[in-house]
Length: 299
Image 1 (cartoon, one colour):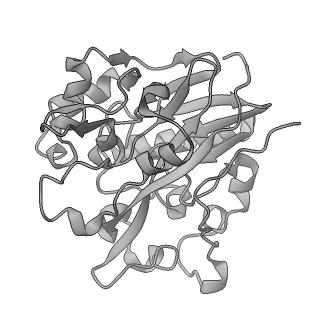
Image 2 (cartoon, one colour):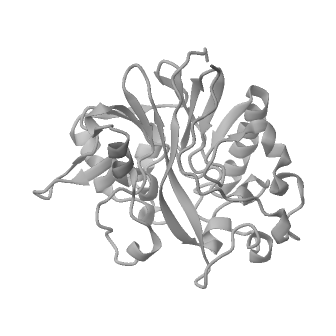
């Protein structure tokens, strides 16, 4: 991949979902993860839902849309998820949905792609960004439109079928340059067709990691979520991407916190080089409240 420069992007935490710790950490025992992600009384841990906004000469590029503002299909969902702030934050930045030229969805699960569509006052569901190309891996589309019984609950068809019906869907296979200096690349495991986004920004290479590292604990080799479609493949993808990140000096997000993390810092994260378990309060990394962090750029 060649290099070009786009201006500084913004990482936005648009929502938080409280998810059962057993689902988040899979086979990893609670005694090994609870010090890094303290659960509430219902054994739920907070997981951030993130979007990435990249200014580009072709128009704004938005990566993932968060859960959106459509009413949940089940009344059990509402108490576990905070209201999405994406459209409010776009408005505060002076960005109209028509200004978004490209929407890249790392996958189509509702927590991350629900904002791709919205209800009109007449009750129709239409794409939230009327002029945008929506970029999705073909394998992700196939899983979402033909879900198995195991993953069916993670999808709702009105998040993404209106995109195809409106002629805005663009399916890709593997690596593709979707705009000058911005690429998508398959990173399978969490879902079929899961992808990450790589962009060259002011002399830095940034990578939006999608579902690969929902918490800092997931930097630890072998930790996989119960919701991962293929957990072994997820772990393999993580190892591959971490090696590449170190070799190419990526800035990465989200990596279990609300900030960009430089690849070289991964080796300094306590959970990465220390055996699992035995953690204390002093070993826990601070979780900054900042939700909008520009990538450092050269003057």
